[in-house]
Image 1: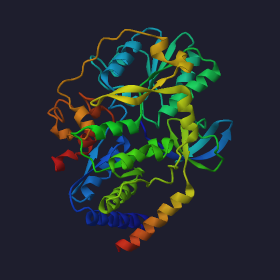
Image 2 (image 1 turned 45 degrees about the vertical axis):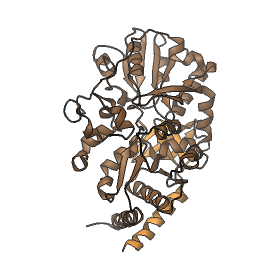
Image 3 (image 1 turned 180 degrees about the vertical axis):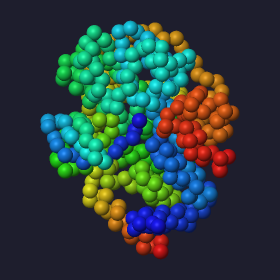
Image 4 (image 1 turned 120 degrees about the vertical axis):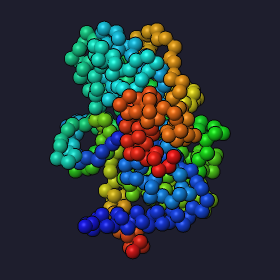
Length: 365
Length: 73
């Protein structure tokens, strides 16, 4: 027996899917950029709800997935130093580098600690003045301001043994790089809600202005996502292309000014390597000269062997929406969540992990 | 990694807020969202408040769903 709220939601979902079916008359590919969207889409079975002419493809929006091996190899090398404590979000632990992972190093005795917030690194630094604490600063514009604020807090507390190893990445330059790739075909974007909470609406305007592609900033509830697809369908039907904001209860037009301010205070834009996408100009954030003493690479230089990638893994093509996970020969065989070969199978936000966990590959292969 | 959850602010001391989610309380930083008052709902990501939840917009969303349910009948 459905209660009133459930019945209202069911009827709203029926409205959205019916309208999407009516408005979209030829095949379209819509890309959800954000890994959290990918998981929400699979968990709610949204692909199965959409009419067959609408294909949802996952993009490069899982920060763990797009972090290349050389970063992991550097983190592993730091973790092997006797006076270093690594702090990290949990989903980095099992990502395989060229020859090891942080989980393997932790099992072998390295001091690697999972933190919920980067600020916890500062308490560890204060408790262990004889050690060097290196926070693995990974993530997009949602997470980068947190690491930047932590650097400012470390300075305020006078902590001289806290460092960040930055692999922060920026979403809009990645979308530009995707659209410059001739293999990639996308008719519209579901834009990342939490990234947008920080950067606002304006940074996506190039999608409409340069590429005439619609984009909708989307929330994470199933109805948020269905409504966002409906908003894209309206634009595609009308041949318009603008950036719309479905997630207005969170995302302001201007984003979060304090977050943007700490980002520009602590970081500078740098070229960055993305797994599967190569080096994208001005798509990363590195600690700037003013805060150089918090930059692990500058303050604690070390030699790391050149990284090697797992040749058979096709995470790179999955991240660009060119192939589906099931098109990879390793998927579900040599590469499963318990023994991941590639990063897309490691992270809970990874496309391969979502396909595997929710069995969604079965009906679309 | 990018998961964020809404929480209610129940106390503020300097730039530290106590928030409540589903009966559990914890402390979060207001460094990225200093203009928060007790009673606000905020989106929390990895120990930081990153944006206020606009209650008026949330109410409009609820109203919209009711309206759409009427269309779908």
